[in-house]
Length: 274
Image (tube, rainbow, N blue to C red; front, top):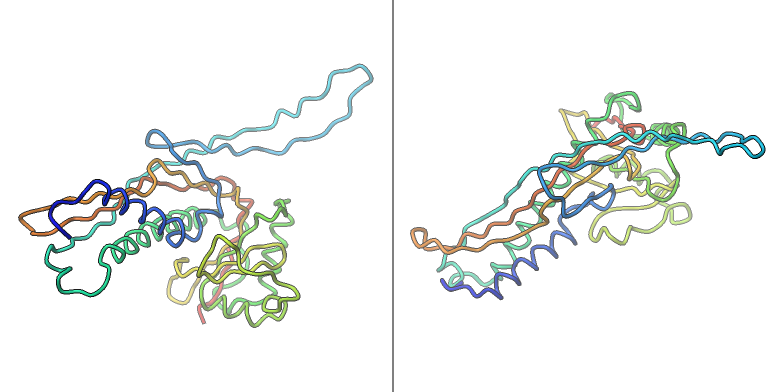
């Protein structure tokens, strides 16, 4: 890299980071409610209650449902992922250092996005928990979680998701209905390079960042509207020259947050990591 960096190079670098983040950074962002371009340090998601239909007397007034609206605040926090690029390093390497840092920054911010969403999922109460940390994931436990969503009248509208760890994914593959194309659909189009399938009307995804304590793993089944994700500043990059380091500092940054909106739409699936 030369000491003088053109504005067009910076713009192209930022565009590359943004693209890499959108394509490969976060697995979960498209699975939850989203608000972008938030102004300020927080935003509000509305939790809408259920309406009740009533009869109306002839020529009478139409009954008002008076649906409850509960504001759920989602705080935004700033996150950074930067690294140094020595001015002489590119004379000694035979790969595209720019692309390496593009991907590294995008993946780091993507992992943070998923970490925020998983933390929001994990903050749900234990009321809807199924399974046990004493045994591996099995079909009976999965159907129990499926029954909880149905019992809570969670919409079966194609926006139900389930995320499991790598070993739990292997357990799923041992279930004939899950592994067979006669029952399960293909990977979701917005998850390139990620293990995913559609079964029981649920979009199943393998994720390595789920809570793990010893041999106790938490997986989750949820509806898209149960979790909110807010972005005040999408992924942005900055490149500056530091003469005292004889290097450029490449910084990627974002301002995001996630929150629990409706825990009735979330089921925690407990499993033994075995």
